[in-house]
Length: 333
Image (cartoon, rainbow, N blue to C red):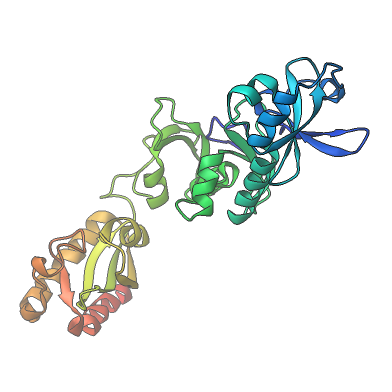
C-alpha cells in the first residue's frame, strides 16, 4: 500500500506516568522527561523539605509529598484530582505547576468525545498524541486538533484509509497509484496505467475520469461516447432536462454540471455512441429538431446560470417524454 503522507503511521507511544513500586500509585511525569529511564524516577532524594516549599505548594493547589530523583525534583499531589505529579522544584517556586494527571484525564476524555481511543504521547513532539480511530489504524494528531474534532469544528482523516480510497479510485479506472507527485503538487499523484505508462494526474481528474493516458489514450472525437438526458430540479423550484453528450455522463453530472449543492439530479438515459464525433452529430441534430418543434421549451440562461455550468441545451420538464422518446429511437437504430 502506498501512503501519501509524511506522518509516521506506527510510532511507539510514550506513557505519561510510571508506577511507584512501594504503593503502585501512578506518578505522572513532566512532558519533557518522559523519555528518561523510568527507574530514575523511583529513587527518593534524601534532602530536607523546607517549610516554605510546603506553603508554596498548598497555595498553588498541591501538597508536596517528597523529593525524588535528584535535588531538583519533587512529587506533588493535586488537590483537584489527587494524582501525583513529578515537577522541578524551580517550577514550583517560580511558576504555577500543571497537574499532569488532570491534563491526561482531559486528553483521554477529549479523544473519547471525538470518537477516538488515546494510545499515548508522541515520542518526538510533545504537542502530538497517538490515537486509534474507529477504523483501527494509528494516527498522530495535535491535541488542539482533537479538541476541534470533539467540538465539531473539523473531522479526522485517517491517512491509511484515505490512501486506500485513492488506490481504489485509480484501480476502478485501470490505473495504479504509485505515490506522491514528483513535482511536489499536493493535488497531483503519480499513477501507472494498465499499458505500463506512468503519468502525473490530478486526483480530481482521476475521480472524474476526465483525462486520458498520454501513451495509449484516444482523443474525444475517436473515443467511445454517449448521448444523455438528465432531469434536474433546482432549489428555486425550476424543473428542467439537460440533453448532451459525454464520454462519461455520470462524471459529467457529479463533477462538472452542478455548481451548488441542493440540486436534485437523475440520469434518465444513456445512449452509447461509437465515438465522440458521432455523438456530437447526433446531439446537434436533436437540438435543431427541438428548437424547431418546441421553441418555447428552451430555458433562458438567466434562469439557471447560478446553478448549472452550462449556458444552453436545457429544456423545460414538459418535453422530457419527447426527449426520451427521441433518444430511444436513436438507440434502436
